Image (cartoon, rainbow over all chains, first blue to last red; front, side, top):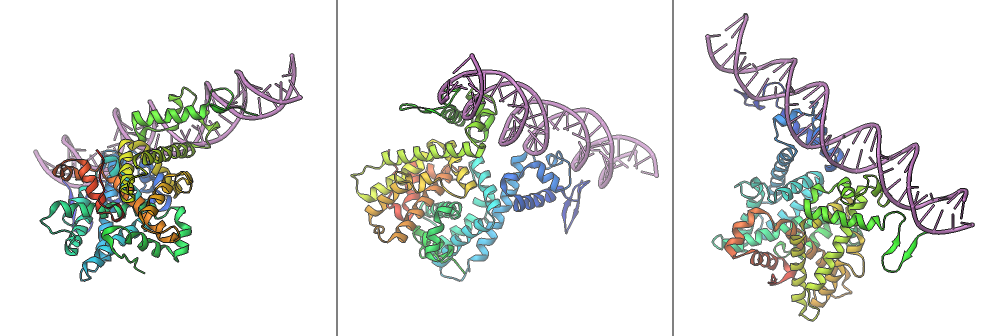
Length: 212
Length: 212
DNA sequence: GTCCTATCTGGACACTGCTCAGATAGGATC
DNA sequence: GATCCTATCTGAGCAGTGTCCAGATAGGAC
Protein backbone atom coordinates (compact mmCIF):
# COMPACT_ATOMS: atom_id res chain seq x y z
CA UNK A 1 0.00 0.00 0.00
CA UNK A 2 2.19 2.73 1.32
CA UNK A 3 5.89 3.16 0.81
CA UNK A 4 7.29 3.86 4.24
CA UNK A 5 10.42 5.95 4.34
CA UNK A 6 12.42 5.85 7.59
CA UNK A 7 13.07 9.59 7.34
CA UNK A 8 9.84 11.18 6.19
CA UNK A 9 7.44 8.52 7.42
CA UNK A 10 4.58 6.91 5.47
CA UNK A 11 4.28 8.45 2.02
CA UNK A 12 0.92 8.82 0.30
CA UNK A 13 0.56 8.84 -3.46
CA UNK A 14 0.62 12.23 -5.12
CA UNK A 15 1.85 14.76 -2.64
CA UNK A 16 4.87 13.96 -0.51
CA UNK A 17 2.84 13.82 2.68
CA UNK A 18 -0.09 16.17 2.44
CA UNK A 19 -1.38 15.53 5.93
CA UNK A 20 1.94 16.63 7.39
CA UNK A 21 2.17 19.51 4.91
CA UNK A 22 -1.30 20.71 5.87
CA UNK A 23 -0.47 20.74 9.56
CA UNK A 24 2.67 22.75 8.87
CA UNK A 25 0.75 25.11 6.59
CA UNK A 26 -1.85 25.54 9.33
CA UNK A 27 0.88 26.37 11.79
CA UNK A 28 2.24 29.05 9.46
CA UNK A 29 -1.20 30.56 8.83
CA UNK A 30 -1.84 30.54 12.56
CA UNK A 31 1.43 32.29 13.35
CA UNK A 32 1.02 34.81 10.54
CA UNK A 33 -2.69 35.70 10.63
CA UNK A 34 -4.05 34.44 13.92
CA UNK A 35 -6.72 31.90 14.87
CA UNK A 36 -9.66 33.74 13.30
CA UNK A 37 -8.05 33.48 9.86
CA UNK A 38 -7.48 29.74 10.17
CA UNK A 39 -9.88 28.44 7.51
CA UNK A 40 -9.61 25.12 5.77
CA UNK A 41 -9.28 26.95 2.47
CA UNK A 42 -6.52 29.19 3.76
CA UNK A 43 -4.60 26.13 4.91
CA UNK A 44 -5.09 24.44 1.53
CA UNK A 45 -3.96 27.62 -0.21
CA UNK A 46 -0.88 27.85 1.99
CA UNK A 47 -0.05 24.23 1.18
CA UNK A 48 -0.51 24.95 -2.53
CA UNK A 49 -3.35 22.52 -2.98
CA UNK A 50 -7.03 22.66 -3.97
CA UNK A 51 -9.69 23.50 -1.34
CA UNK A 52 -11.05 19.95 -1.50
CA UNK A 53 -7.75 18.15 -1.04
CA UNK A 54 -7.69 18.30 2.78
CA UNK A 55 -10.88 16.24 2.89
CA UNK A 56 -8.88 13.15 1.95
CA UNK A 57 -6.87 13.51 5.15
CA UNK A 58 -9.35 15.02 7.59
CA UNK A 59 -13.06 14.26 7.87
CA UNK A 60 -13.88 17.94 8.25
CA UNK A 61 -12.50 21.18 9.59
CA UNK A 62 -12.92 20.19 13.20
CA UNK A 63 -10.74 17.14 12.66
CA UNK A 64 -7.95 19.28 11.24
CA UNK A 65 -8.33 21.57 14.23
CA UNK A 66 -8.12 18.60 16.56
CA UNK A 67 -4.88 17.46 14.93
CA UNK A 68 -3.41 20.95 15.36
CA UNK A 69 -4.66 20.95 18.92
CA UNK A 70 -2.98 17.63 19.68
CA UNK A 71 0.32 18.86 18.29
CA UNK A 72 -0.08 21.90 20.50
CA UNK A 73 -0.51 19.79 23.61
CA UNK A 74 2.57 17.81 22.62
CA UNK A 75 4.56 21.01 22.33
CA UNK A 76 3.17 22.23 25.65
CA UNK A 77 4.24 18.98 27.28
CA UNK A 78 7.75 19.26 25.84
CA UNK A 79 8.06 22.82 27.06
CA UNK A 80 6.79 22.00 30.54
CA UNK A 81 9.19 19.08 30.80
CA UNK A 82 12.17 21.12 29.62
CA UNK A 83 11.30 23.88 32.06
CA UNK A 84 11.16 21.75 35.20
CA UNK A 85 14.49 20.44 36.41
CA UNK A 86 13.77 16.89 37.65
CA UNK A 87 16.43 17.31 40.37
CA UNK A 88 14.92 20.48 41.80
CA UNK A 89 12.84 20.32 44.99
CA UNK A 90 9.29 19.17 44.16
CA UNK A 91 7.70 22.44 45.20
CA UNK A 92 9.94 24.37 42.86
CA UNK A 93 9.19 21.87 40.14
CA UNK A 94 5.47 22.33 40.42
CA UNK A 95 5.89 26.09 40.36
CA UNK A 96 8.15 25.82 37.32
CA UNK A 97 5.57 23.73 35.53
CA UNK A 98 2.89 26.31 36.26
CA UNK A 99 5.03 29.18 35.04
CA UNK A 100 6.01 27.23 31.93
CA UNK A 101 2.37 26.51 31.19
CA UNK A 102 1.42 30.16 31.24
CA UNK A 103 4.50 31.22 29.33
CA UNK A 104 3.75 28.72 26.59
CA UNK A 105 0.27 30.17 26.21
CA UNK A 106 1.75 33.66 26.13
CA UNK A 107 4.35 32.69 23.52
CA UNK A 108 1.95 30.78 21.25
CA UNK A 109 -1.43 32.42 21.80
CA UNK A 110 -2.88 31.23 18.50
CA UNK A 111 -2.06 27.58 19.05
CA UNK A 112 -3.23 27.79 22.64
CA UNK A 113 -6.51 29.26 21.39
CA UNK A 114 -7.03 26.41 18.96
CA UNK A 115 -6.18 23.87 21.66
CA UNK A 116 -8.97 25.04 23.90
CA UNK A 117 -11.48 25.99 21.20
CA UNK A 118 -11.27 22.36 20.23
CA UNK A 119 -11.51 21.08 23.78
CA UNK A 120 -14.55 23.23 24.52
CA UNK A 121 -16.31 21.97 21.40
CA UNK A 122 -15.59 18.35 22.28
CA UNK A 123 -16.08 18.98 25.99
CA UNK A 124 -12.86 17.12 26.63
CA UNK A 125 -9.12 17.54 26.47
CA UNK A 126 -7.46 15.34 23.87
CA UNK A 127 -6.74 11.99 25.53
CA UNK A 128 -3.17 12.51 24.45
CA UNK A 129 -2.92 15.44 26.84
CA UNK A 130 -4.86 14.01 29.74
CA UNK A 131 -4.60 10.26 29.79
CA UNK A 132 -1.38 9.48 27.93
CA UNK A 133 1.56 8.28 29.99
CA UNK A 134 3.82 10.90 28.39
CA UNK A 135 1.20 13.63 28.38
CA UNK A 136 1.21 17.03 30.01
CA UNK A 137 -1.21 16.05 32.77
CA UNK A 138 0.82 13.07 33.93
CA UNK A 139 3.90 15.26 34.22
CA UNK A 140 2.02 17.48 36.64
CA UNK A 141 0.74 14.47 38.52
CA UNK A 142 4.22 13.10 39.11
CA UNK A 143 5.46 16.43 40.38
CA UNK A 144 2.46 16.67 42.69
CA UNK A 145 3.15 13.24 44.14
CA UNK A 146 6.77 14.20 44.82
CA UNK A 147 5.53 17.41 46.43
CA UNK A 148 3.50 15.32 48.84
CA UNK A 149 0.17 16.97 48.04
CA UNK A 150 -1.31 13.51 48.17
CA UNK A 151 0.14 10.03 48.07
CA UNK A 152 -0.47 7.93 44.97
CA UNK A 153 -3.00 5.84 46.91
CA UNK A 154 -5.08 8.89 47.78
CA UNK A 155 -6.12 8.81 44.16
CA UNK A 156 -9.06 11.16 44.51
CA UNK A 157 -7.32 13.93 46.38
CA UNK A 158 -4.30 13.76 44.12
CA UNK A 159 -6.47 14.03 41.04
CA UNK A 160 -8.35 16.97 42.55
CA UNK A 161 -5.14 18.81 43.30
CA UNK A 162 -3.89 18.33 39.75
CA UNK A 163 -7.16 19.47 38.26
CA UNK A 164 -7.15 22.52 40.52
CA UNK A 165 -3.63 23.39 39.42
CA UNK A 166 -4.48 22.87 35.76
CA UNK A 167 -7.60 25.04 36.03
CA UNK A 168 -5.71 27.79 37.76
CA UNK A 169 -2.95 27.74 35.17
CA UNK A 170 -5.45 27.70 32.32
CA UNK A 171 -7.44 30.58 33.76
CA UNK A 172 -4.31 32.61 34.26
CA UNK A 173 -3.05 31.75 30.78
CA UNK A 174 -6.22 33.06 29.21
CA UNK A 175 -6.36 36.22 31.26
CA UNK A 176 -2.73 37.22 31.74
CA UNK A 177 -2.80 39.28 28.55
CA UNK A 178 -5.89 41.30 29.45
CA UNK A 179 -5.26 45.02 29.29
CA UNK A 180 -6.92 45.67 32.63
CA UNK A 181 -3.83 44.25 34.31
CA UNK A 182 -1.34 46.45 32.50
CA UNK A 183 -1.13 49.12 35.16
CA UNK A 184 -0.73 46.54 37.91
CA UNK A 185 2.07 44.84 35.95
CA UNK A 186 3.78 48.19 35.55
CA UNK A 187 3.40 48.89 39.26
CA UNK A 188 5.00 45.53 40.04
CA UNK A 189 7.86 46.08 37.63
CA UNK A 190 6.95 43.72 34.86
CA UNK A 191 4.81 40.84 33.79
CA UNK A 192 7.01 38.23 35.41
CA UNK A 193 6.52 39.65 38.86
CA UNK A 194 2.82 39.85 38.16
CA UNK A 195 2.74 36.25 37.01
CA UNK A 196 4.51 34.85 40.04
CA UNK A 197 2.43 37.11 42.26
CA UNK A 198 -0.80 35.65 40.99
CA UNK A 199 0.50 32.10 41.03
CA UNK A 200 1.66 32.40 44.61
CA UNK A 201 -1.95 33.08 45.61
CA UNK A 202 -3.02 29.87 43.94
CA UNK A 203 -2.59 27.24 46.64
CA UNK A 204 -0.48 24.47 45.19
CA UNK A 205 1.96 26.74 43.37
CA UNK A 206 3.54 28.11 46.52
CA UNK A 207 5.98 30.95 45.99
CA UNK A 208 6.10 30.60 42.23
CA UNK A 209 9.04 32.13 40.44
CA UNK A 210 8.67 33.38 36.89
CA UNK A 211 12.07 32.34 35.60
CA UNK A 212 14.14 35.05 34.02
CA UNK B 1 -33.75 63.80 17.53
CA UNK B 2 -34.93 60.81 19.42
CA UNK B 3 -38.08 60.48 21.41
CA UNK B 4 -36.99 59.26 24.80
CA UNK B 5 -39.52 57.28 26.76
CA UNK B 6 -38.86 56.92 30.50
CA UNK B 7 -39.94 53.28 30.38
CA UNK B 8 -38.49 51.81 27.22
CA UNK B 9 -35.59 54.20 26.75
CA UNK B 10 -34.57 55.90 23.50
CA UNK B 11 -36.81 54.79 20.65
CA UNK B 12 -35.51 54.51 17.10
CA UNK B 13 -37.68 55.19 14.10
CA UNK B 14 -39.14 52.17 12.34
CA UNK B 15 -38.82 49.19 14.61
CA UNK B 16 -39.88 49.53 18.19
CA UNK B 17 -36.32 49.13 19.45
CA UNK B 18 -34.34 46.98 17.08
CA UNK B 19 -31.16 47.06 19.10
CA UNK B 20 -32.97 45.58 22.09
CA UNK B 21 -34.85 43.15 19.83
CA UNK B 22 -31.61 41.96 18.26
CA UNK B 23 -30.03 41.27 21.63
CA UNK B 24 -33.06 39.27 22.69
CA UNK B 25 -33.09 37.42 19.38
CA UNK B 26 -29.41 36.65 19.84
CA UNK B 27 -30.12 35.30 23.28
CA UNK B 28 -32.80 32.99 21.88
CA UNK B 29 -30.56 31.75 19.06
CA UNK B 30 -27.79 31.17 21.56
CA UNK B 31 -30.01 29.17 23.89
CA UNK B 32 -31.58 27.18 21.06
CA UNK B 33 -28.64 26.46 18.73
CA UNK B 34 -25.48 27.21 20.66
CA UNK B 35 -22.62 29.65 20.16
CA UNK B 36 -21.37 28.23 16.86
CA UNK B 37 -24.71 28.99 15.20
CA UNK B 38 -24.72 32.60 16.38
CA UNK B 39 -24.35 34.44 13.07
CA UNK B 40 -25.40 37.99 12.39
CA UNK B 41 -27.78 36.72 9.74
CA UNK B 42 -29.34 34.18 12.08
CA UNK B 43 -29.95 36.92 14.62
CA UNK B 44 -31.49 39.18 11.98
CA UNK B 45 -33.67 36.29 10.81
CA UNK B 46 -34.77 35.57 14.37
CA UNK B 47 -35.67 39.23 14.82
CA UNK B 48 -37.62 39.18 11.54
CA UNK B 49 -35.45 41.76 9.84
CA UNK B 50 -33.14 41.94 6.81
CA UNK B 51 -29.49 40.82 7.13
CA UNK B 52 -28.28 44.40 6.73
CA UNK B 53 -30.53 45.93 9.37
CA UNK B 54 -28.25 45.16 12.35
CA UNK B 55 -25.54 47.33 10.81
CA UNK B 56 -27.51 50.41 11.80
CA UNK B 57 -27.16 49.43 15.45
CA UNK B 58 -23.82 47.64 15.59
CA UNK B 59 -20.67 48.52 13.66
CA UNK B 60 -20.06 44.86 12.85
CA UNK B 61 -20.57 41.38 14.22
CA UNK B 62 -17.96 41.76 16.93
CA UNK B 63 -19.80 44.78 18.33
CA UNK B 64 -23.01 42.77 18.59
CA UNK B 65 -21.05 40.03 20.31
CA UNK B 66 -19.59 42.56 22.73
CA UNK B 67 -23.07 43.80 23.63
CA UNK B 68 -24.20 40.23 24.29
CA UNK B 69 -21.04 39.67 26.31
CA UNK B 70 -21.68 42.74 28.45
CA UNK B 71 -25.21 41.61 29.20
CA UNK B 72 -23.75 38.25 30.18
CA UNK B 73 -21.37 39.83 32.65
CA UNK B 74 -24.27 41.79 34.11
CA UNK B 75 -26.22 38.58 34.60
CA UNK B 76 -23.18 36.90 36.11
CA UNK B 77 -22.81 39.77 38.55
CA UNK B 78 -26.46 39.55 39.54
CA UNK B 79 -26.19 35.84 40.11
CA UNK B 80 -23.00 36.12 42.14
CA UNK B 81 -24.55 38.83 44.30
CA UNK B 82 -27.74 36.86 44.88
CA UNK B 83 -25.71 33.78 45.79
CA UNK B 84 -23.57 35.37 48.49
CA UNK B 85 -25.37 36.27 51.68
CA UNK B 86 -23.84 39.60 52.79
CA UNK B 87 -24.30 38.58 56.43
CA UNK B 88 -22.40 35.31 56.09
CA UNK B 89 -18.80 35.06 57.31
CA UNK B 90 -16.45 36.53 54.68
CA UNK B 91 -14.76 33.22 53.98
CA UNK B 92 -18.06 31.58 53.21
CA UNK B 93 -19.02 34.54 51.07
CA UNK B 94 -15.92 34.24 48.92
CA UNK B 95 -16.51 30.53 48.53
CA UNK B 96 -20.15 31.16 47.62
CA UNK B 97 -19.08 33.66 44.97
CA UNK B 98 -16.67 31.14 43.48
CA UNK B 99 -19.27 28.40 43.38
CA UNK B 100 -21.84 30.78 41.89
CA UNK B 101 -19.40 31.80 39.21
CA UNK B 102 -18.84 28.24 38.08
CA UNK B 103 -22.50 27.35 38.33
CA UNK B 104 -23.43 30.31 36.15
CA UNK B 105 -21.02 29.13 33.48
CA UNK B 106 -22.48 25.63 33.79
CA UNK B 107 -26.05 26.87 33.52
CA UNK B 108 -25.44 29.26 30.60
CA UNK B 109 -22.54 27.73 28.67
CA UNK B 110 -23.37 29.53 25.42
CA UNK B 111 -23.45 32.98 26.95
CA UNK B 112 -20.33 32.24 28.95
CA UNK B 113 -18.61 31.18 25.74
CA UNK B 114 -19.51 34.42 23.99
CA UNK B 115 -18.38 36.43 27.01
CA UNK B 116 -14.85 35.04 26.85
CA UNK B 117 -14.60 34.66 23.07
CA UNK B 118 -15.14 38.39 23.02
CA UNK B 119 -12.70 39.07 25.82
CA UNK B 120 -9.98 37.00 24.18
CA UNK B 121 -10.43 38.84 20.90
CA UNK B 122 -10.24 42.22 22.60
CA UNK B 123 -7.59 41.04 25.07
CA UNK B 124 -9.64 42.58 27.84
CA UNK B 125 -12.71 42.00 29.94
CA UNK B 126 -15.49 44.52 29.32
CA UNK B 127 -14.85 47.49 31.58
CA UNK B 128 -18.37 46.96 32.86
CA UNK B 129 -17.25 43.67 34.39
CA UNK B 130 -13.85 44.72 35.66
CA UNK B 131 -13.80 48.41 36.46
CA UNK B 132 -17.42 49.32 37.15
CA UNK B 133 -18.39 50.00 40.74
CA UNK B 134 -21.33 47.59 40.46
CA UNK B 135 -19.42 45.01 38.40
CA UNK B 136 -18.64 41.40 39.10
CA UNK B 137 -14.99 42.05 39.91
CA UNK B 138 -15.70 44.68 42.53
CA UNK B 139 -18.09 42.31 44.30
CA UNK B 140 -15.26 39.81 44.66
CA UNK B 141 -12.91 42.55 45.81
CA UNK B 142 -15.21 43.62 48.62
CA UNK B 143 -15.59 40.06 49.84
CA UNK B 144 -11.82 39.60 49.73
CA UNK B 145 -11.29 42.71 51.83
CA UNK B 146 -13.76 41.46 54.42
CA UNK B 147 -12.00 38.12 54.41
CA UNK B 148 -8.78 39.89 55.34
CA UNK B 149 -6.74 38.58 52.41
CA UNK B 150 -5.33 42.04 52.17
CA UNK B 151 -6.33 45.40 53.52
CA UNK B 152 -7.64 48.02 51.09
CA UNK B 153 -4.35 49.90 51.36
CA UNK B 154 -2.33 46.86 50.27
CA UNK B 155 -3.74 47.59 46.84
CA UNK B 156 -1.33 45.37 44.91
CA UNK B 157 -1.71 42.25 47.01
CA UNK B 158 -5.47 42.60 47.13
CA UNK B 159 -5.68 42.97 43.38
CA UNK B 160 -3.43 39.93 42.91
CA UNK B 161 -5.60 37.81 45.18
CA UNK B 162 -8.74 38.79 43.28
CA UNK B 163 -7.14 38.09 39.93
CA UNK B 164 -5.96 34.73 41.19
CA UNK B 165 -9.45 33.85 42.36
CA UNK B 166 -10.98 35.00 39.12
CA UNK B 167 -8.50 33.00 37.06
CA UNK B 168 -9.09 29.90 39.12
CA UNK B 169 -12.85 30.21 38.81
CA UNK B 170 -12.63 30.85 35.09
CA UNK B 171 -10.33 27.89 34.51
CA UNK B 172 -12.60 25.64 36.51
CA UNK B 173 -15.69 26.96 34.73
CA UNK B 174 -14.21 26.10 31.36
CA UNK B 175 -13.01 22.66 32.35
CA UNK B 176 -15.63 21.41 34.78
CA UNK B 177 -17.65 19.89 31.94
CA UNK B 178 -14.76 17.94 30.41
CA UNK B 179 -15.56 14.26 30.07
CA UNK B 180 -12.23 13.18 31.53
CA UNK B 181 -13.56 14.13 34.96
CA UNK B 182 -16.76 12.10 34.73
CA UNK B 183 -15.43 9.03 36.50
CA UNK B 184 -13.91 11.11 39.28
CA UNK B 185 -17.21 12.95 39.75
CA UNK B 186 -19.00 9.61 39.97
CA UNK B 187 -16.46 8.33 42.48
CA UNK B 188 -17.05 11.44 44.61
CA UNK B 189 -20.82 11.11 44.44
CA UNK B 190 -21.67 13.95 42.11
CA UNK B 191 -20.50 17.08 40.43
CA UNK B 192 -21.10 19.25 43.46
CA UNK B 193 -18.66 17.33 45.59
CA UNK B 194 -16.19 17.46 42.74
CA UNK B 195 -16.63 21.19 42.38
CA UNK B 196 -16.10 21.97 46.03
CA UNK B 197 -13.20 19.52 46.10
CA UNK B 198 -11.37 21.35 43.37
CA UNK B 199 -12.18 24.78 44.77
CA UNK B 200 -10.89 23.83 48.19
CA UNK B 201 -7.48 23.22 46.64
CA UNK B 202 -7.50 26.71 45.20
CA UNK B 203 -6.07 28.81 47.99
CA UNK B 204 -8.45 31.65 48.62
CA UNK B 205 -11.62 29.60 48.32
CA UNK B 206 -11.02 27.67 51.51
CA UNK B 207 -13.39 24.77 52.13
CA UNK B 208 -15.78 25.73 49.38
CA UNK B 209 -19.27 24.33 49.57
CA UNK B 210 -21.22 23.70 46.41
CA UNK B 211 -24.65 24.75 47.62
CA UNK B 212 -27.51 22.30 47.24
C1' DG C 1 -47.12 69.93 3.10
C1' DT C 2 -42.07 69.65 2.50
C1' DC C 3 -37.78 68.33 3.61
C1' DC C 4 -34.24 65.87 6.39
C1' DT C 5 -32.37 61.97 8.01
C1' DA C 6 -32.33 57.72 10.65
C1' DT C 7 -33.83 53.32 9.48
C1' DC C 8 -34.61 49.33 6.76
C1' DT C 9 -34.59 46.38 2.29
C1' DG C 10 -32.83 43.74 -1.71
C1' DG C 11 -29.13 42.73 -4.15
C1' DA C 12 -24.50 42.08 -4.57
C1' DC C 13 -19.45 40.63 -3.46
C1' DA C 14 -15.95 37.76 -1.61
C1' DC C 15 -15.33 34.36 1.47
C1' DT C 16 -16.39 30.00 4.02
C1' DG C 17 -17.21 24.57 4.77
C1' DC C 18 -18.41 20.88 2.17
C1' DT C 19 -19.79 17.63 -1.78
C1' DC C 20 -19.25 15.33 -6.08
C1' DA C 21 -17.99 13.88 -10.79
C1' DG C 22 -14.07 13.26 -13.02
C1' DA C 23 -8.90 13.47 -13.86
C1' DT C 24 -4.42 11.52 -12.23
C1' DA C 25 -0.99 8.47 -10.95
C1' DG C 26 1.20 4.99 -7.68
C1' DG C 27 1.15 -0.34 -6.78
C1' DA C 28 -0.36 -4.74 -7.60
C1' DT C 29 -1.65 -8.17 -10.99
C1' DC C 30 -1.28 -10.44 -15.09
C1' DG D 1 5.37 -4.17 -20.12
C1' DA D 2 0.17 -3.48 -20.30
C1' DT D 3 -3.87 -3.48 -17.30
C1' DC D 4 -6.51 -2.60 -13.57
C1' DC D 5 -7.45 -0.84 -8.87
C1' DT D 6 -7.73 2.64 -5.82
C1' DA D 7 -5.97 6.41 -3.08
C1' DT D 8 -5.36 11.04 -4.19
C1' DC D 9 -6.22 15.46 -6.13
C1' DT D 10 -8.87 19.06 -9.05
C1' DG D 11 -12.66 22.12 -10.57
C1' DA D 12 -17.06 23.33 -10.35
C1' DG D 13 -20.81 24.12 -7.58
C1' DC D 14 -23.99 24.61 -3.31
C1' DA D 15 -25.61 26.95 0.72
C1' DG D 16 -24.23 29.84 4.19
C1' DT D 17 -21.50 33.82 6.07
C1' DG D 18 -19.96 39.05 7.01
C1' DT D 19 -20.22 43.28 4.82
C1' DC D 20 -21.38 47.03 1.69
C1' DC D 21 -24.39 49.91 -1.22
C1' DA D 22 -28.20 52.13 -3.84
C1' DG D 23 -32.57 52.95 -3.04
C1' DA D 24 -37.12 52.70 -0.52
C1' DT D 25 -39.52 54.16 3.77
C1' DA D 26 -41.23 56.80 7.34
C1' DG D 27 -40.82 59.64 11.69
C1' DG D 28 -39.74 64.63 13.21
C1' DA D 29 -38.75 69.32 12.34
C1' DC D 30 -39.95 73.31 9.78
